[in-house]
Image (cartoon, rainbow, N blue to C red; front, side, top):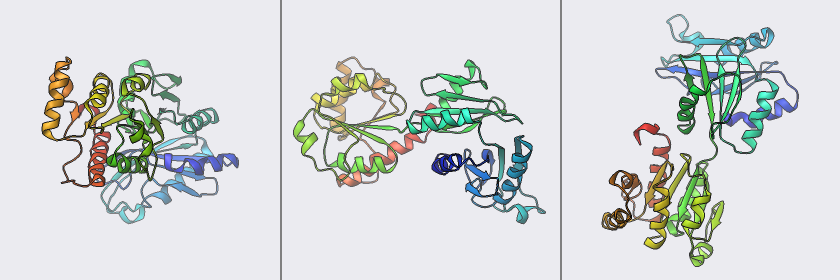
Length: 337
């Protein structure tokens, strides 16, 4: 839904009556992923997509019926010989779409406020004629009526995997709205310049930490980091929320800086830790951190040599390999990392 929020804001400001259709289940070669949404106006106008054009006509028709009845419906669209061309799912996929009157004003106001503030949250709703809603913040705070505390662990996993899905025997649906992921860069260098540009391209907030004022302030950035801290990592990191939405890269080449950052990051919940350097450099790093009391399991959390192996040589290529590895981790289930 996030890609059509600006359009929704405009329609709501105009006072238009809306229905919203959301893909809640898919099978086989479905044309759009779970969580894709389509907003339907009373005039039959469409904003967004649930199938890339395959079943939109049928969904709009059902959306207008839902607007008239004020009752939500869970509708299945599949393929049979008779309906393949009428519905258009000739790819062989199947979709389950929940079509409902747009969220109640109080729910939308809170959702819109959280989106504007870039506060991570999940929207949970029951898949029934009169849906109930709950909003779960990334810190576990809950408002609404549609869940119990025992369900929070599964919602948290979905949130950190950015994975909208049906939950709890299929009678609930959670739509995740993670805050911008944070790319934490320790050390300013040529690689950092390209990495900052790529990270912002993929929607990351960027924070650079480097106590060396010359490196931090004299490096010419095409796209500057969102924040720059000319301080030691041990002065900055303890004040940050080092959660599963944080990705850290160690780039300074100076053990006095890198090791101090790693001592804190290895004890945190960050999703990714990558450290620049050759295998020989990393072996020395492991020896130093082992002497500080870190276990082999903890040290195995460090991705080194950093980045996917694409034969990178130039700084921009190395930055690309790092960004690719971060995105791979970001899009992987938490339990396999």
